[in-house]
Length: 114
Length: 517
Image (cartoon, rainbow over all chains, first blue to last red; front, side, top):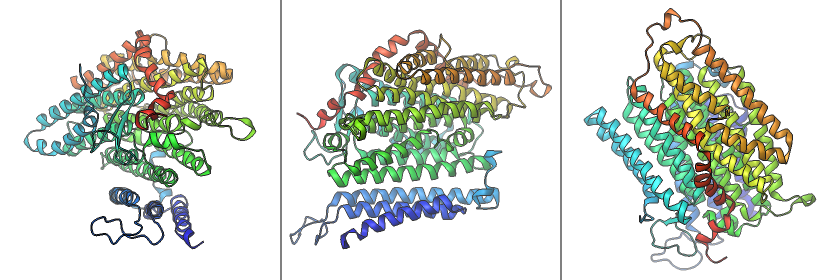
């Protein structure tokens, strides 16, 4: 049971993020929703690589014993870097939307539909 | 001629290098930069065609990063290119090259063009990476590169409120889609300890988790491919981006569609004939699901196009319908896997990918030309433009006949394959497809009359024909359309047939990497 807690946290983070994305009307909160999903997915990747009682996967002068799996960590690092770029782009667009529309309410930002 | 394997990563590396050189060259001279970008993309197109010529004769090529040969277990990133990948790469390179030639005049009055061209080259690198890679995580990385670059380009006219809104919508959709792709990749990795598509395809068991991963991958990539009911971002971003960018976005959308095909046919190719509940095999379930989505896409796309009054939004809804036609062919091919007419349906669907990119691309370029000449996008206000813009009118007629599937042009060739094969699965599918094709013709004839025919308005008296670079790029696409329309056999036998064989022959794809199965 105790080993399942990270997976429960993953599910909770992703569902919270989806909730924020679907039901929140503020653009900033939607961006927060995306980052919550991202944290959930990253946590999932990291959890996959963990082994019980393992040490960090550094081969030089290693004391021996089980090592955590390094590939998911590499994947997570890549994903975090990409996530930062996407986050910066989203927030800069939010700034521009606020300049044009004077509001961050999704219901009022719908000039495309007219 | 001997074509070495290291040309494959070059197809991604050259646009990437060009992207980072463009701002430097832009400091020297603007014209020099435009020529540089066109040369880089032309060089890239030549490389893609060289790779294609080898693949169509010799079969699959692989390139491993950081090692000479494939080592076991496969942890290195590798590019695995088969006929389907290179088919998509050819489409993407043609579209980008045409769009850049078009931008020369179309974007001339804008500032910040060094960033514009940098982003176009990044987008090219991302799209080609998506279609050439043989690794799921690498696919995710290129997917994100494509979404970031295309979002920035959609919102390139940052002073227009609508394009910023469309850009935000696009980045939300694609960020969420890409995260779910990553989640699915993580699920597959956790079970099989591999990221390589061929290795995964060899090991896949169709367990409960695999089903979740399959659903996540199809939904997330289908959302980026603009399939109804996940199409809401597509008319917005196609309609608000500059026309030259819209043409490249078609390529990015089709690259996501390629992702769907790769997942279904190659990643899950091994388990497609597994029986699930009620003695129905997986391919029938997935196939009918895709056919249903396709029919809905066709109907919604066409009916929504009927009521639009904005030129580019109208074409964008037409593009949704065209994506429906591709999926109809491909879905029918999955339902009837292994039969002759299933093969024909798949051929039709794949051939339609090429034709849709060209036809819809041409229409978007014409819409951009009209915007360039009149600064007007609403169809209610345009009138009598055929008097002043005779070449553009001819290109529009070619595009309109091709997109609605009229006989001498390329749209007819692929749609006929789709009609005749779906008729054997269920006649209703073929009837819906033909009816909607006729409706599509009605939509575009309406556009033709309201924009090009009618009395000469004094407002448009001084409208001139668009500059030569725009005419040239439209002419290139129109020539390819007419050529394919006149000699469809040539294209089907030499390009489309190998591509559909590559999709169906997943065991060959797997054995290139895994060996001896």
